[in-house]
Amino acid sequence: MHETNFSLFPFPSIREGQREFMEDVRDSVEGERILIAHAPTGIGKTVAVLVPSLQYALENEKTVFFLTSKRSQHKIAIDTLKLIKQHATLNFVAVDITSKQSMCPRATPIYREYYSLFNEFCKSEQRNKRCRYFLGHDEEALQRITNELLHVEELCRWCTSRGVCPYKAALEVAESADVVVCDYNYLFSPDIAEKVLEKIEPGLEDLIVIIDEAHNLPDRIRNNLSDELRMSTVTSAARGLRYIDREMHGNLMELEQIFAKFAMRAREKKSAEIPVERDVLLEEMEKVLRRRIEVMSYDEFVNALQSIAEGFESSPYKEETEAVQRNILSVADFLDGWRTRERCLRIFSLTQRERGENPTLYFKLLDPSVISEPLFQRVHSTIMMSGTLCPTEMYADVLGATPDRIRGKEIVMKEYKSPFPKENRLIVVTKALTTKYTQRGEEMYRRVAGKISEVAQHVKGGMAVFFPSYELLKEIAAYLPEEVRRRTLVERRELSKEEKNRLYELLRDDNEGILLAVQGGSFSEGMDYESNVLKAIIVVGLPLSPPTLDVKTIESYYAGKYGAEKGRLYGYLYPAITKVLQAAGRGIRSEHDRCIIVLMDYRFAQFPYKKCLPSDYEVTLTDRAEEFCKAFFK
Ligand code: SF4
Image (cartoon, rainbow, N blue to C red):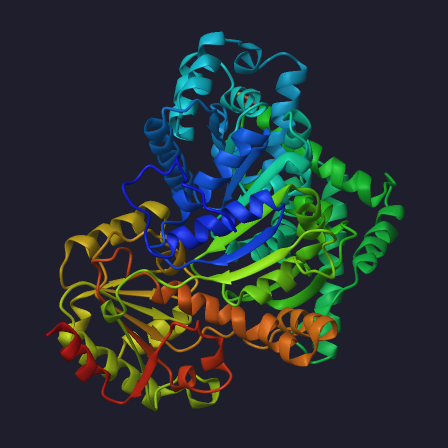
């Protein structure tokens, strides 16, 4: 290890833990390594990762690819780069890009929802020279994007006002930029990555890849290659085509029959879910398509559905037919995705997940490492970082960043300590309370609600209670006493983004508010809380998935790969613990914040759950959580 003064660092001093992280990042980019960093909130990760990476990139003609899954992180990255630029009076080019359809000034809501439809529209507009933004070229527009560090919203507004396509302009600048801030998909969604990487100058070998909030990466890769189709959608799509295209109406009715057959099989097996092989659906569909008047293959059927959906765009009755168009697109996209040869779990379920009766067929990529591992192998270096990347070993295994799979690259796993004063955070685990399935019931709900209310009496400031599901939230909230209920702000499944923001503002502005929300939801993961908004967080129970076929399949897949213990940890326990840690981490955002965390389930103090908590989680088991709370706020 050698001394570096990190001259690009734009603040007066480097925080505790931050220097260690910066040195590790520097060593990783210099040594072409993979760094997997569990770095708690407060370390100042964004600046700490950007300074050494940018410094190395500028000196060695590399490009920093800063990948993030959240819009808010784009803003933080660009703001940090602005600070670096001002501080170092340095000339470098950085560009902020989101998805093509979100940057397009011509995208309608349906285009934002269905990428396939948008992509066809965009391609055809380009091909037929009908998009004036695509045809527009403006040196001044490009100059500004190159010289100034613009947030993607500013970039889009600017380009649109100059009559040029924002996406095309951003890619042109990205071609030779030093830093590109973009979504995970630009590297980890093969279709998108291929198109983008062919446009930019540096090859994969010249990229320094930074993956922000990297705990989201395995699920994001899986979700990119996943889809579900409800039988009701097939029925509605068929009905919508009855008077438009009799032949395709008939084909969709046949697909509905295939669903009915799967449902019969599941009922015969007395099982709510059954696995379905890839080829079974393909062959069943081919068989019926061969018997139709207009014989066609599965692929032709998918293409025909897509063409019909595209045709709706020029229909004079577009608005009335949008629902039909959506249903047809959902069927076409699903059948298109189903063809993938990647190993997926493929399940037919009589009930749609969490939403009651509605036969549904779905598929999901089983192993995200099939996408990530070859990329880690090829890029110059990779830094994965998050406040909940714990245990780092699991992320290494799940994403394929292990020495037996990556040749010639060192892999470094590190857990950094929180720089915040220890006494600002108190963690207690309550005795006797649980959401364990066998102990659920009125009596338990009443006791949990009682304990929430006792704790709430002593909290001085805002508070959040995170439940494992909406159902449990409702069941338990019903037992909260009136004086507590009056203070509650409740997250509901159907809230729009605007309504959620409004709810957050109410919580922020009310010194006594109690947010009731779910673990794994927007309030426990996506939302960026300002400092001091939450003084207490109660995490009720563990959000363990029910033993569904997909959970069992993932568990047994990892058990086969890494042994039974890891199978259970990776497939079942850690996904739940990650949600808990995300929720529990909403309280402390700066060194001045103080927060009490009450883990309301005795299992947090028991094996194996306790072992899954980070090493700096010092928990106290008690049946007097309210007393701890009282003392904490004294
Ligand atoms: S070329 Fe650009 S502006 Fe035109 S449709 Fe495509 S993304 Fe939109």
